Length: 392
Image 1: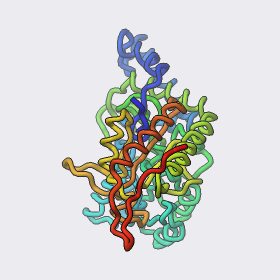
Image 2: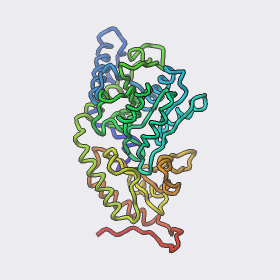
Image 3: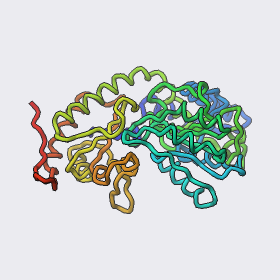
């Protein structure tokens, strides 16, 4: 198997697994226990808090453990709205993950004005529109994805956050695809909340964190036990938290490897473009996280390409969402102003530090072979068959 769907989830690093095992076996104490057995678990939780804080440049006390990115996003949004009930607008972008988009749409049906800021054809945020959307001082929350999960395009977080701060608007960023892929430091930015998830950087599933600026107000959404300094009640998932901490430590130590991952991704793209006629990159090539490639294959059904690549042992994702068994055009690609046809013919490949050059070579060959089977006659004035070039 060649796994190139690391934006969906990543393999658990063996060091992460080994760190978790004692807390799944003999070290099963409750961190709230007042005896030595529980205190050992508490020390492990606090150690992980330090590891996560170090990765993003935060103070350990600003880290709240959650079940993952979705919970972190929901918590940040709901808290921000509760803190400023007199403001009745929410600002976000048209290219958010559904864990933000659907929450904003929900509140848009309950009396809030949902403002979706546009992006251009490369996926870049329209900052002037963002500024204008904030100008009436009615926005309670501005939430902007740091790195898009489909295209990898980076948002201008520093600029967008600064504009929100000028209007006394709470700023949150969904950084699930950003954390662990390049250096970031929340202490240098006017960010009140940030979401992250362990399984996006070789940690376990079901555990994440919410960064909360210690100078910003917060209203907890989960009550009943007072854990996480009364910010998120519920017995802590000690094995998951330990795994998140170790994954964060490893990610911090391997940030220098991002250049190698980017070089491998760039070679993959250049050779696919050279080998297969008409292929284009979705998103700004120079402003992406290093592991992500979203490619448009003209005249090719994306779902069919996925099936053939799966048969060849390659795991990747469509630039679309699956609903009730039917593949819909990617709303992200469409939000960039592209057609439904382009959205249906786009596929995402996402690498990790475990991806090898040999796997990339095999994938390029598999793509060329699959596309040659799927290419169709295009309805142009001089109808022609687009076929794959043969590699020399």
